[in-house]
Length: 217
Ligand SMILES: *Cc1c(COP(=O)(O)O)cnc(C)c1O
Image 1: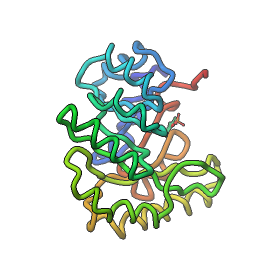
Image 2: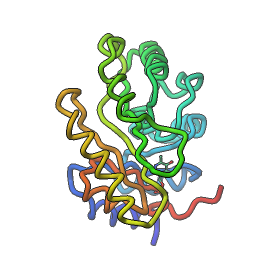
Image 3: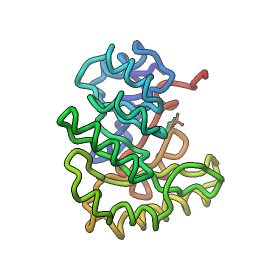
């Protein structure tokens, strides 16, 4: 199957109100253009420099999502164009996004990354810290950054009971707080687990290898 066939077929399987982020990390601009030619416009990258290089070469109507961990000193390189940042995990990072987005008179949508995997992972907030950020006074004064939802990465496993538990927990947390904080995106699900994530209420899936094939690092 080709990239364009993969993406068209995948989209027929997604409910209409679910957004697909085509994860193009390590893939070439030609490969991205093949996906683009089907009409797809939302692409995800996990490295800021790589995303900025590609954004410069590719059509300007692509909506770029940063799905990887973000270092504060690199926010300035994506502030002019990035549409959404999925893995926000601190107020200090939000402050930097606010500052850099302000320079370009833009509003950048952000998701808070919640730690859901039971396996050891360095990134993501626990629920208490996420609520501290959502309730913070600073956030209320920000005009250039908007928290629009939550993101989670499940344990890398095929064990469905672990995945069910992790997705379920994030969905419950999301449901509990979405109205108070105007959250309308729940980003969860990748190539190996997006069907399960959808069954648990995901509104946004981040799919790479099932579209572009395996990555060679
Ligand atoms: C690479 C990546 C994905 C996509 O992974 P696939 O298994 O190739 O679909 C999704 N989310 C994040 C955060 C990633 O880094």
